[in-house]
Image (cartoon, rainbow, N blue to C red; front, side, top):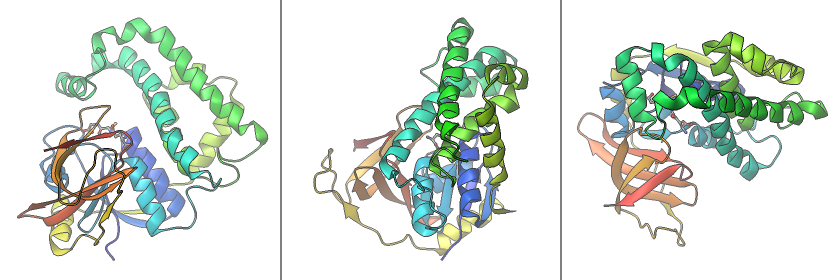
Length: 305
Ligand SMILES: N[C@@H](CCC(=O)N[C@@H](CS)C(=O)NCC(=O)O)C(=O)O
């Protein structure tokens, strides 16, 4: 079996989600550092058009999004479990909640820092977050601060029963999804974050515990080696179609998949898996052979071609 290769850059809170997952699973993995902004030619070659971070590769199978990366790691390394509470559906639903928490943090960072970002980076992120008017982020700063503290307070409440982690005594998916929001704020705006998280002692103690989960064991490799590994491998044979699929997708149908929240690129291919929360497409390129790119369905649009 090919071991995991994470294509990511560390400054991203979404990468931090994947790192905490790898930390909980305590696995050996290889790392290809991707640029923070285009050109990202090697990553696009592998995914067929998705430019976001994180992306996890196992041979010729490419997993997009921290949500699906969690599900795949759980399948390949069942213990320790990422769903210690046993509430798998609710824990996955909380991914959307942690995205809302992230948005409150993002709005604060945009209001206080975007003007000082390098011009090319700011322009790129304006394109990625097309639904946000960067020039107006400052107008809503007070509200964003209140929203951020309201979300943080939910964590304090959840930890009130004395559990070490959000789902109880063991760390899980929700810890890995939520922690990077606080991590981002502490890194970007330590003083502001200190004010907004004041008097939330359980949250602060929990942060320390999640940080200690680490990231497993990382070895750096270059993108060429990862692409070569894709070329030498075959995708895991896996065909699975929900007969009641909401879009009536069928095997081999050509589709285009893209994220529904930000502009992280589009991937075209032939459907191999279409389940209520999974869509996988097969595609080929002379440099990597045939690969299957897997996405969660929640948060991704599928267009028939
Ligand atoms: N829901 C996705 C979100 C991924 C995401 O938005 N990543 C940002 C990084 S902060 C991104 O890809 N930005 C554009 C880029 O890095 O090129 C996940 O959890 O993996």
